[in-house]
Length: 251
Image (cartoon, rainbow, N blue to C red; front, side, top):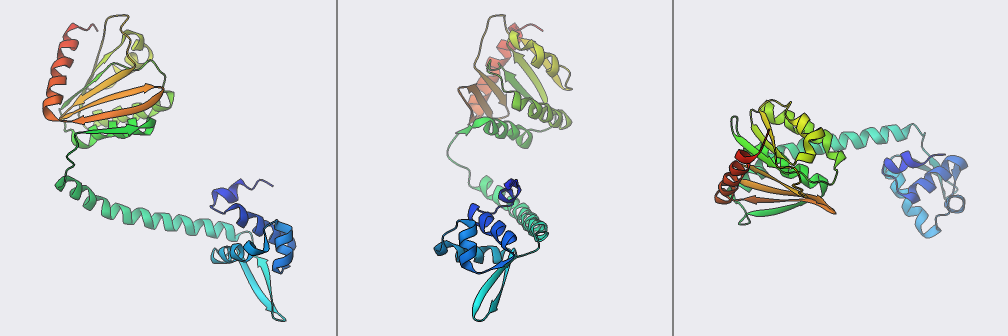
């Protein structure tokens, strides 16, 4: 029997062993349950108590002896629904406090002007910031592209740019020549987008995203991460560099 669904449901290995043993035994005291499940007597009562709280085990007392029985296996579906209901309730509560936390973050800004976001998920988090702070008609620059493939992010970038141009944010892409296919050819099809290329032979393992008061340096070689620098003067300087590079690039 494939027990992975029980693990995904959140049951521990001990709970799975005791529950499946009880399903086979029908009704039993702790001794046979311990023997059938290979869970020690010192632990089996604790596991049975956890299963009882989940509604997966019941008991009766006969002649001053406690006998246990596994609940109907369909109870697993009810337990799953209860977990889903609990998660939905948690989501509702989180949505209620997020605006308050965001306001508190704005009122008490960090003194730090640079942050590091690790991993491919971190790259996404850093990029999402543009959608949060930029307004319709504003311009962002994306300069360079890593030679290391990040295929898992390709669907994300496609969805991101859809949100970007729906919000009315313009984007200038300055790609390396080797990125013409597929990145450049795809990017130029997005609305509010313009693509140019650096001279052939220019290789980069990092890229820059410049917008508003922010410069993001992304790296995907060996370890993927993004460094986000939030400083208006720094961002303005990089925008000047971007414009110089843009003027010397070719379509």
